[in-house]
Amino acid sequence: MDRKFLINLCILIALICVAGLIMIGMGPIKREVPTEQEWERARVEDQVIYNELTGTEEIEGWEPQGISAGAKILVGIVLILVVATYGAIFFGFYILPKAVHRFTHMFYGSAEEVEADPMHDARAFFARGDYEGAIAGYRAVALAQPENRFPWVEIAKIQHENLEDLDASIETLRTALESREWRVNDTAFFMFRLADLYENEKDDKPQSVSILHQVVELFPETRHSANATHRLRELGAI
Image (cartoon, one colour):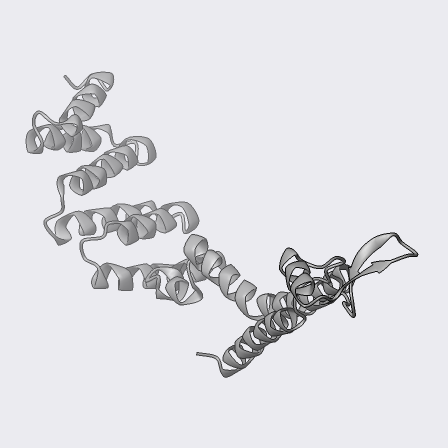
């Protein structure tokens, strides 16, 4: 733990303790009249006298005990201000920054987590307009995470939209599709994307229809099959 934090925490605790001892040491608030016990003891000891000026009884030699309420309140306010000021400084320098850091970490993640993003470099290349560098970065992620379709999708997207190389984009999708045994949703995604490119970009309707038929055959009684069948009807292929 931070040494300065511990030192200042000890100082703050010491100030609180000293303030408490001072308040206790000041004793009770001054009493303006004797207590019942003092009156009883004075009568037993024959110390009660009559004050002709005020017309009241008094205890001989009795003086008010304790500190005045105003003085005690004033000292208390001063002590509270001293402790509160140091406490605020301690909080501002040591507690608040840690709390803000923890809050920020909770909602936005730490810098280490950002750097740990395997696709961080690829995105950085893309942001700078280095599309070949971005493709290389995504290929590295595809090798490290073979079950992740996202880097393949991004490569194909860059080739199609940024490099304007439709054939390379199609080849990337085909390579990805054949590279491993994908989950159903991933396989269907690649196939629908290929069918779309063949139909709308290559103007190759027969190839698009062929891929959609494959989807129906591979995934019968699924939403993918239903979507492919719907599209085939729209194309007049069934």
